[in-house]
Image (cartoon, rainbow, N blue to C red; front, top):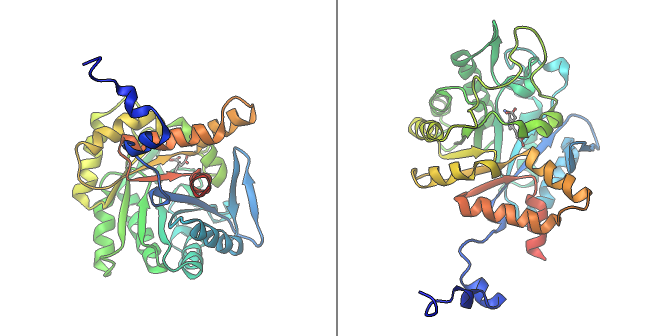
Length: 330
Ligand code: PBG
C-alpha cells in the first residue's frame, strides 16, 4: 500500500522498464502473408494496402530471400487467379501446376527452410467469391469439405508445411486431417482459422485477390452463414475446441485488434498455440491515418503488435511483419 508501494519505481528509467517488461516482440512471432499473381517481373501495389504488393513468381523468389535475411521464417500464401479460371467448385485450386502449387515450390527452392503455410478456401477460385460451393442461395458444407481436403493434399504434395483452412465450414479440420494422413502426410500441420468473424475489416484483402462476394440474386452478399457473428464470445470457444478435437495443431482468431478479448479467452482455455491475424483493414486504417499525418506509424504499429502479444498470441500474421522486424533490427 502507498507509500510503501510506489509502482513508479519500476518505471523510473529505460533499464528498469526493460528489466520488468512482461512481453516482447521478436521476428519469431511473425507469419508473413504473401499475395502471388501470374506474370513476370510483377510487383504491384494493392491500392487499399499502401506499401503491400502482389508478386509474380520471379519476384516472389527475391522477396522470400529478403524476408529470410531479415529473420522472417514463416509465410502464409494467397494467390490471385484470373476470372477465366474461376468456377463454382474450385477446379483450378486442385491443379497440380496451379499458381499456389508453383508458389510453394518457388518459395521452397529459394529458401528450403522457410515454413510455408497455405490458404485453403475456395474464394480466390470461386466465380461467386465464396469460400464454398454455392447452390440455391446456400454455401454447401460437406461438399465443400471434400474439395478443401483435396486442396490440402495438393498443397502438401507441392511441399507446404502447414495448410491453413480459412473457410469456416463445419468439420473440415477432421476431413483434412484424415485426407492428409491417408496419403502419409502425417507431418503436414493444420493451422485452423477457428474463430473467424464475419468482419468488415477484410475489404482490402478482397481487393488484393479480387475475391469479394458477387452481387447476384441467389448468391449471399456476405459470409454471415459461415463466419462468426462479432457479438459472440462463447461460440468462439466452441469453434476452437471443436477444431482442436478434430486435429488442428494451431488455432486462430481473426481479425486481431477488435477481438483481443477472444484471444485471451481462448488462451485461458486451450493448450495449443494461438495465431492472431491482424487483417487487411487494420493495416489500411493505420496507413491511412499516417498518410493524413494523424498518427505516428512505427509507434502505433508497435503498440498494436505488443497488444496482440499481450492478449495471448503465440503467432501473429501481420502485413506489418517486415516493418516491425526492420525496426527491431534497428
Ligand atoms: C478468405 C480469407 C479472407 C481473409 C483471409 N482469407 C477474407 C474473407 O474471409 O473474406 C482476410 C484477410 C485480411 O483481411 O487480411 N478465405
